[in-house]
Image (cartoon, rainbow, N blue to C red; front, top):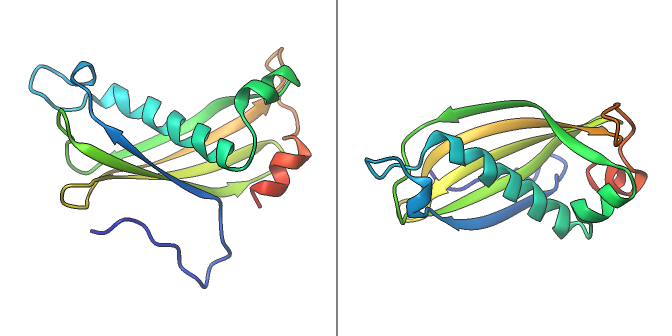
Length: 143
């Protein structure tokens, strides 16, 4: 399999790619990337995608906008191992006035094989945890 290439017939969506090297501390005793360490990778992808759009979580939080993971689904295809170099593609797939759905594809760069796919839904909440509308400037960027 090859890394994701956007279909030109589909309206463009926000997308960002990052490279990640699997660290020893992220592995189980057999040298495989532990399943619990995939979730921080997805967070890194969302953070960098947001930064690419000229925003960051710190500023949004100072303005009273917080994003919480409401749903996550991961499909593991094959293992990653210690010292593998991976590429994570993070895309915005859908959004509503209160949530954003992301899709992820994680590839091993040595052979371009798909490691896993995932989807998350993040919801916008205020400091008390109540669901609120996504800031207008972010909503415009994710359409």
